[in-house]
Image (tube, rainbow, N blue to C red; front, side, top):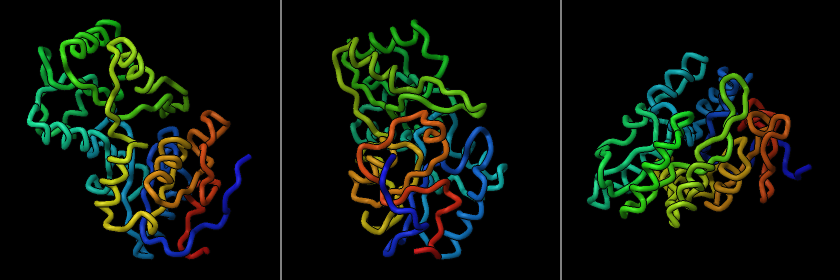
Length: 265
């Protein structure tokens, strides 16, 4: 059991950072009541950004899938770790990167030069079944050659649209760290850099924002560390105990995002 408030809102909140997978979207469909919850937030003038660690598809494809499911969102409202990685790489002046990510991720890595020889960076994301021995071994040799490691996220598991639990990118990041005796720079949730960018985009101080999600570590612990309020939803990873509870107590515990309502305090 985990303590936490059960009301649908907290006083003083003016912004929401909303997780996607497992929160708005589950098993290939919108969570029941999610569309109405988004509409209530917009009607109340609540600033909104959608946050996701996925790199299996770009922001444009995520937005299209959500709209097809009846959720009215725009690609510009979605924050992905690839965008932060692109900024980090651009700022370094060293644009060459070995990419262990799906081809579609390149859309959100604008300005990054994908190379197979002597990269400055190794970027790891949701390569899924593309994490073959040969590809991981290639990444290892890039790191041994002096490249720096960027983890778009460190998720342990993810839940497919069919509801199956599978390994996420985190175990493969850990394998490369161990093999090459290095440490990855994390840019996705729960990294501070991710939440700093989200708060800058939403234009509000942390204490006026609530992070809503199903992932105890990425959403609840990450949001709390960034100074936001937090709401844990009992869908997605929390359904059936597929993931561990957060180490910190969320401010709200909701059956689903459908219970998030700025009219209820």
